[in-house]
Length: 177
Picture 1 (spheres, helix red, strand yellow):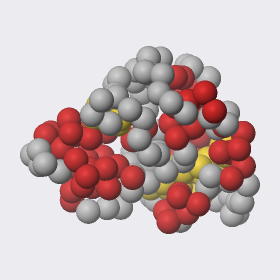
Picture 2: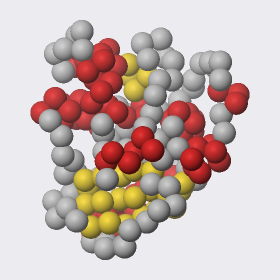
Picture 3: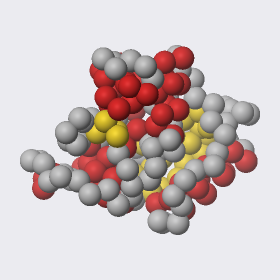
Picture 4: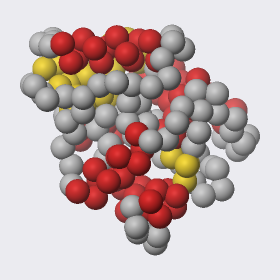
């Protein structure tokens, strides 16, 4: 397993890869393991840096995420969501031929180990409401705004504190390590 890190406006991101592709991109907090980079993690760091600088709209990286067949179906739909767009859980459920499976889609979306590159942050509630995000709803809001998504002003957005999220909201992504 290869590991490297990239600093972003939303905190430190850990990039992991196998010989075949990226296996994980998560917000990791301040804790770091030893860096053991390869060309795939280096390319991932470069593309993420370009994305955060506003210079990249799509990613071109080999992916090697571990998951169930259903999770892979959902993640494939996520990759097809263009930058600047959002879709609902129901939209994805219909695409994977499970029109009553919005909650299952939400579960698969929440288990996406390759955040940003497999853009689970672009999935919103049926009425456009921001729903959960493993890295914290503040990060989801920031990412969507960064991508030019016009969001409805919902209660609570005015109190979002990205600095607090960067310092404290790591627990939900720890299951991926």
